[in-house]
Amino acid sequence: MSAANNNNLKMKANESSDSTVEYYSSTFISVTDIVNNNLTFINNNNGDRTISSEEETIHISSITSERDQISIVNNQQLQQQPVTTKEQPLEKEEKPLFIYVLVHGLNGLKSDFQYIANQLTLLYTNENAFIINSELNEKKTHKGIEKLSQNLLFEVLKQLYEQQELKVVVKRKIYFSVVGHSLGGLIIRAMIKLLFFDLLDENSMLCKETFTKNTQNDFILYRNYYLQNIEPYIIPTSFLTLSTPHLGSRRPGGSLFKRSYRFLSHTFMKLCGKTGKELKFKDATILEECLLYKMSIPDSDFIKALLKFKYRTLVSAVHFDIIVPFPSSSIRSFNPYDVPAYGKHSFRIAGFCSRFDNDSYAPLFNKYCKKQQLMESEKKQQKQQQKKKKRNSVGDFVDNSNNEDVIEVMRETTTTTSATTTTIEKMTDFNNVISWKTKGTELEPFDGEISNEEKKYFRDNYFQVEYPIQVLKNLQSIEWRRVDFEFTIGSLIQSRDIHIIVVKKEVPFSVDGLISAGDKCIDFVCNLLKLDEVLTHKSPVTIKI
Image 1 (cartoon, helix red, strand yellow):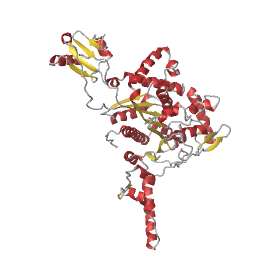
Image 2 (cartoon, one colour):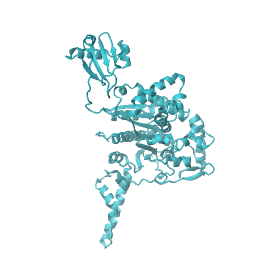
Image 3 (cartoon, helix red, strand yellow):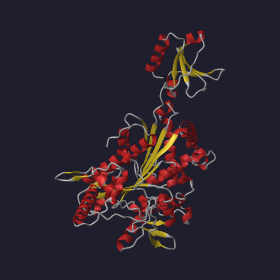
Image 4 (cartoon, helix red, strand yellow):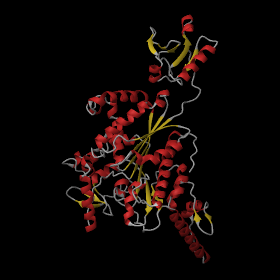
């Protein structure tokens, strides 16, 4: 206990007219305090404990209620009268805790997520939030997804154990979200399976054989703390991946350029050790034994772990991501978007699925939706109305029933001399002006085109990804939310930035326009995560967009 706290406790004890001054679990005594101040534990016959020093004794009642009661008296008073404790009801519910786990990708670093970590910190300035920005797998990402997920689990448990804030109040709601970029998305898929299933089974290989003797004792300590103080109160909230190769990283070939790209891509994967083999479905002799296949099986613990999260979101770049093409990151076999022409650097949301059904999301999507498309849709509706008016003038019958929703949406339209701005207040109305095409998703299944009939590999319509058809079908057996990012770049060489700009990771000679696009990506992702959390626990929090 620090000297200041020590003096404070003695003053309160001496000034009190009662023989006992009651303190509750908001007073926290750390192991460091006990060691530094020569305090010792004494077990009493009634099961209670006291912490003693030369000048004062802290009496800790045995746990007979929901909260421990701590009484502080001086030694002389303790000898004269027995310590008494009393129950006091909680005046208000403890504030919830929000935990975010951020995981970088292949050959990535902790710094890859520095901007998202900083933004989340700002969003939770007045709340209890704990952000775990993973670093244990730095320079180790070639060791295979299973090993990386075990490392991540150890790191998460260790940081939860060491976080003193968690030890003050443990009986409160804990909202748990995970975010992975690129390979990091696959690592968190494997990690949550360990967290929600293997960790609970003390006979599992994870608990018995995974870690070395040097770390096994620490792991058991962290595990026991998690199971006792965190696991009973945890609420899985948001699972979000950014440009993650859920369908692997195989390339189908095709034209001379595509075949050359396939050769270069697969050669690079060979340099990535076991992880590279897993991304190409080459880590086993038969497909069914490959890790990515096993991670997709509908009744597996991998999928059951995903289903625990209220929100499962796939964020993808529709074009120019040469590392993880759109079909793999969006888990779909068809890319409905045209390739944008080169031009001024820009970022916008080209489309998103209808599962964003709460109107609280509307301001965020209004901010980054494809404004040009909104304006074009509005002009199209106006032209249709003008045509119908002309037909009305010659006595033609016009049925306006199908346009009621569109007309209602356009009531919020403000026209200026320079531009037209459309504001949409209801998420259901977005579908009237931005038609998100479902082909190739679980809403409109489509296998794709056959790439290797013997091995049952298929490919997307742009010949960018080759995937086992069963993996696609397995992953589409559950519901996903999808957000499709569209970037405009100045030249083909700038496509190297698209995969990493979603976390605002810069490469040498990055252009200012794309860095600005990275800022917008960060803003959208962090506010989306915050909205998911708010809607989960429905606290009266106002988000500034």
